[in-house]
Structure formats: structure tokens, C-alpha cells
Image 1 (cartoon, rainbow, N blue to C red):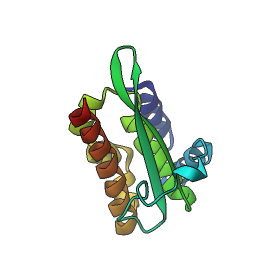
Image 2 (cartoon, rainbow, N blue to C red):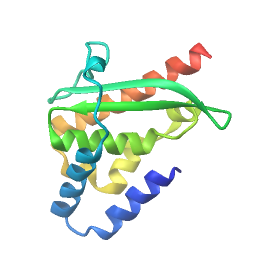
Image 3 (cartoon, helix red, strand yellow):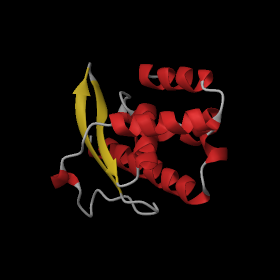
Image 4 (cartoon, rainbow, N blue to C red):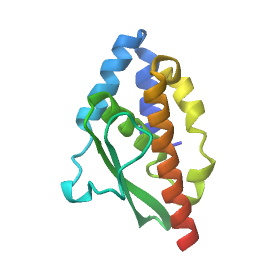
Length: 142
């Protein structure tokens, strides 16, 4: 587990009600580093999301491990927060480990699954699928 993911779990553990968690998700989105507008292309656009979502990945070597470096953006603040959470789950991990991560279980643990609209849940699943597809492509290219 990454430090970012543990911090996220710890943060959600102390936030008792969903409104506080919702605000925290929005704050995570506001803190997401800006995405270079040149990366917002049809190739980086995530289909299946009600909002506009872009995710770009590239592979870098860190400490002998190949990792995806992820950048993303959305036109909706809550969705930017969900992107940030997805990046906390999948970031700083060996590319080979990414396909086996059960993101749905983590979202359920955080209480996200039960509080997101079906459209947001589908969009989140599309983001996860994109990240896993990018990881699979990186593994195949190695």
C-alpha cells in the first residue's frame, strides 16, 4: 500500500459524515496538479464519464521499478477529486501490480460506492479501466 493511500484511508476514517467526506473529495480535486492543456486530446479523454475526464500516463523508472506517472483533469470538481483518489490508489506502484488492484473494494471501504450516483460510479469505473489498460500496455511494451 502506498503512503498516499494510507493517508486517504486515515482521512476518511476521521470524517464521520458523508458531507465532510464529499468536501474532502472536492479538496483533493482542487489540489490535483494542473494538466497541460496539450495533453487534453481525444486519446486521453476517458469515455463512459458524464463529465469530461482526461487521464494521461507515462512510464518512468523509480528505484528499479517501472511506474505509471498519472496526470488528469475534469470539468467537474467532484470528478477531479475522484481522479485524485484513483491516482492515490494506483500511483507509486510497480506497473505489474496495477492490474491486480481491487479499486472497487477500496472505493467501497471509503464509502464512495454507496454515495455516488450511478453515473459517477460508472465514470469512476471507466477511469480505473483506463489506468489498468495503460498499465497493461506498459507491461506488454516491456
